[in-house]
Image (cartoon, rainbow, N blue to C red):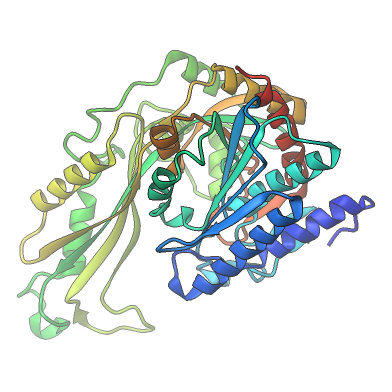
Length: 451
C-alpha cells in the first residue's frame, strides 16, 4: 500500500480496504452473515461521525439510515449507495483474491472497489471532513442498502413505510461512471431492466444420444433455435412491439455525444472484441445509452464435465435480460417476450418462463436548478468541462425515489471505463476516491443554495 504523507488520507485508504474486505455478496445466501457484518461496520462508522444511525432489518439484507439533526431552514439531501457486491465468478480470472484488497500503481483492486463501496465511502468520508469544519449546509440523510445487486426487492416498501422520515429535496448517487479520466460526468439517464429465466424440457430423463437421437427433440438444440429468434441478423430485437414506446434521441443529445472523447475504437479496446456489433443506424454510444436491448446472460443444459457424455439432455435453460429506455414498461416487455417465446417454441419441448427482477428507466432534466448545481460541483472538483451523458446500466431504485419521495436523482459518477465492475479485477483509482471526498463537500455547498 502506498504511504501517504497525509495521515488523513492514509486513514481513509485504510478504511476503504477494511470496507472492501467484507464478502458482501447479496445474490448468495451463504454470505448473509457477511452482509450483516458489513452493515454493522457502516453503522459504527456513522456513529463515530455523530450521525443518528439505525440498522433496519428486512426480509433480506439490512438497510442503514444515518442523518444529521434536521433543521427546517435548510434543504435536505439524501445520498444513496449500496454495500452489497456482485459474485466473483469466474474466480480463476482474478489476479488476486477479490476480498483481499490491494493497491497497485495507485489503483485499488477488489470486488466492490467501484461498485459501490469506493464511491459511497468517498461521500461518507467527505461528510466526515466537512463536519470537522462545522455544521453541514444542508440536512443530510444517508440511505445505504444491501440488495442493489439483486434489484432492491425490499427498498421500495421501506421507502413507502418511512416516507415522512426520508422526505428530501433531492437524491444524490455516485454509482455511475466517468467517460474518461479527468472528465467530470453527469449522468442524466439510466436504462431500465427486466429479467427472466426460461427452461425447456423434453424427455423425462437424459437419454442415450445414440439410441434415441433423431427420435426426440433435444432441448439444448431447441433452446439455441429459440434464442436465435430474439434478434434479426443485424442485431435488431425481433420481438413484436418491442420498440413501440421508444422515443427518438433528441438532436442536442446526438450532437453532444458525438463531441465526447469516447470513440468506437475505445469500446473495441475496452472490451477486447475484434469489432463492434449492434442495431444499425446508431453509434456505439447511442446504442449503449439510449437504445433497448435483449441479451442472453447465461445458458446451460446437458453434460458440462470434462470429456464427452453422449446424452440428449432432459432440460436446458437460459437467463435473459432486457435493457429498457424511457417509456418502456418492464411488465409490458416481459409479457411481449413471453408471447414471442411461446410463439416461436420449437416442437417437442415444453417452455417454462420465470420472471426475475425489473426496474424502470430514468431520465432527469440536466438543465434543472439541481442539475446545474451538480454540474458546478463536478466542474469545481475536477477543473474541467462536464460531460452530459446517459448510461447503459440500471439502478432500479432511482425511479422509486421519484415515485415515492417525489425527488429527482443526481448521478455523479466516479468510475472509469476500465473499472471492470461486475467482472474479475474490479478496480478504483485512489485519485477518483479522493476526488469523490472533495466532490461530496462541493456538492452539498452547491445544493444548499438551490431553490
